[in-house]
Length: 302
Image 1 (cartoon, rainbow, N blue to C red):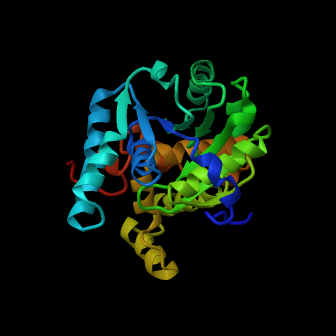
Image 2 (cartoon, rainbow, N blue to C red):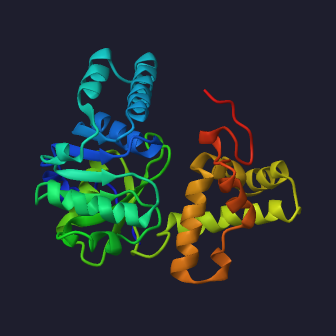
Image 3 (cartoon, helix red, strand yellow):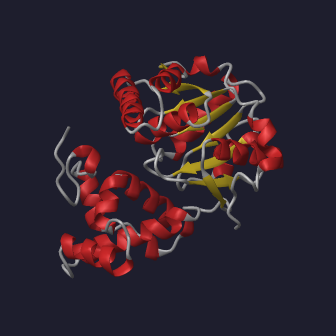
């Protein structure tokens, strides 16, 4: 479908100013990236919800590090850095979402977890609040069905790392209203993002294409066709991509790749989406990629 930019959603931009506070669920890499862009670029108040206080503290330090780098590069002033930091606060209780205008959920790709979370959000958040999921593969329609406001539920799939990547996939569910779609497009523009719109089908656009590509590269490694280095070098230099599929899988997280492939396989029912046994084995071993220190490559832990 057509690319949505700020100009394309200008008609909805006025209503985006009504979003005063955004609740972000999950203080992992995606959630913290979303919180950073919401506070720094869109200049909205942000509440980050996560039960893991250590993860929250790590995430807030990461936001400050990004801001410090921007100060050193002359992109922002110390005052702007302080203002952005003041817009972000954290909580371990979902009850603190009682006054938010927009929620972006960024927890792991677990359908039952997301449905339960949206049921709770439906009870706690104001009736006008839009509930968005950063899911990269799970049905928005199914998530929305867990609430009494399916017309206000939408998919908002950010790319990793959020502060760098310009794209957000927008996925309306079966019941998502035109008003919810327009406001979500306007908020995305306010966050400095370009959007594409996908039908609510497994994997949407990006992962319907990307994950089978990574999965096939794992099969090539598993079958001894080539080494990890030769697979990645071939795709980097042969197709002009910034990193090879195995490195990319490590950066995304092999557990995330496996979860998405399982959704594609079960929902679409085609064996071409069957997860590579080597991918399953790596996840079982705890070799999840960069975040765990080992995946298809080894990474020094910070």
